[in-house]
Length: 276
Ligand SMILES: [Zn+2]
Image: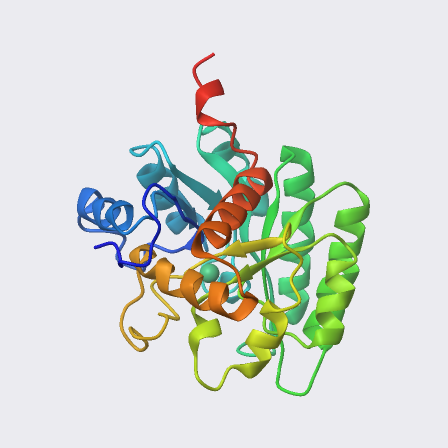
């Protein structure tokens, strides 16, 4: 269902969605609901080999669904695999990025050396395949170690010509400035609607207009008024609405800006050029 404040004819791009552990029992219904809500563009993120394969399979059935393949830092030990085993995904027509990759020191303290090795190899893979990277970084409260380690690797990556998005970014303003100087894109999600998330809103006010992407991170982090429920790409309009109010933008501007940023980032050609 499209909320009445979604401008007709405008199309949102959910740049970060997961299918969940059980995959998606009814793909057509999942996509229909998103499309009807004004969210026909979706990037499905893998987090290990199996979920990357499921995302690739789903994307192969819908023109405006793309996928990323990669090993999430929380899966480095739980679902280990060789980073190079993701390379054949690049042959799929809807392969758009390497991800979700990164460092998570919040949940995992003992696997940091493995996380760093996998992240480094994954960024090398992104350079080799000439694709952008979708990056997750989370620190222990009060620490900047994960951001410092990520910065060192992403700095090399950016200087070698790599592009990346920090998805669901929740770092400090200082961290934001450092990564922004590397040309980072930033993913703004449902947290921007949370009552207590003033830090997320302070960041969302600073993102430059050409580096801002919208995402759900579904099935996690559903925006208000769906908070606590299973998230879905069809809830993205509520995040867009909150961002528009915060920045003082019209919905039209918010939708067209974030969707064109996403298409540029994922290098999706204009639809009228696709068949030439
Ligand atoms: Zn994610």
